[in-house]
Image 1 (tube, rainbow, N blue to C red):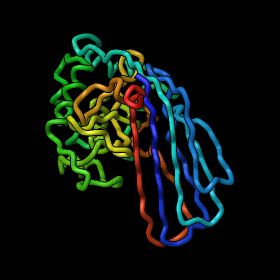
Image 2: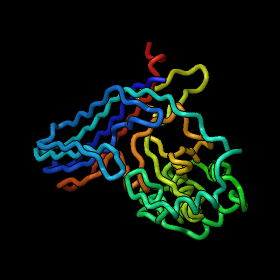
Image 3: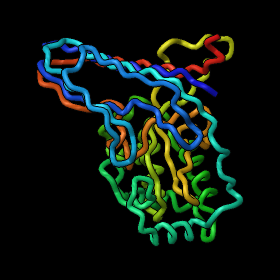
Image 4: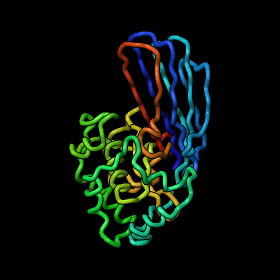
Length: 293
């Protein structure tokens, strides 16, 4: 499947902004069944400086600096990506969760792909005893690591309600867990905290999910959204689990960045020099090329 992606972020400021410094993680990854065919990021007003680099985890990070006064700031990322992801792991095979835990603890690899980075608490994912206890119900003694992750994912899908007004980007994990409400960011953080609480390596994945309009309706331009899910390291690679939808990550998921939590992979972050209110508009399109014809 080849997707055409468009991600627009547009800020409008009440007062003039004199300086903006932004870090952009909007470039899809190549590898593990995904290939970037083309990609471009356009920033308006044009930046005086632009730096392209990779962060510690190998994610593409573009840093832009705008020093001319402006009242609006627009970031548009366009990509073409081929996705032919490997089949999800068979829950009936693979290691037990206890043996996976021991194997990871014995690792000495500290490279970008190392599972050790997915064990410790992070800025947005502290270890919460209540979350660890909740996750433990999915991992009986001797149970498979993948089977347990699938069960935990499906329980979160069943026990929590999607509610865009219940939380925001700063809501603590313990609060969203107590509310049993939130969005994909919250559900992913909760699942990660549960896995880490059992000593299992888990990462946060940002990207896109293809969505389908209701039967008989045309898709609306800009109506898709960025998405987040969880990766569990098992037998040498990261496997995706989407607790918001209760499914393993497959060919409808497009990976942009992977890190310890949302703070590592925020699509747009930075600072501005100015005062007054601002408005934000985000529009995302994830379109299979066969639908464009």
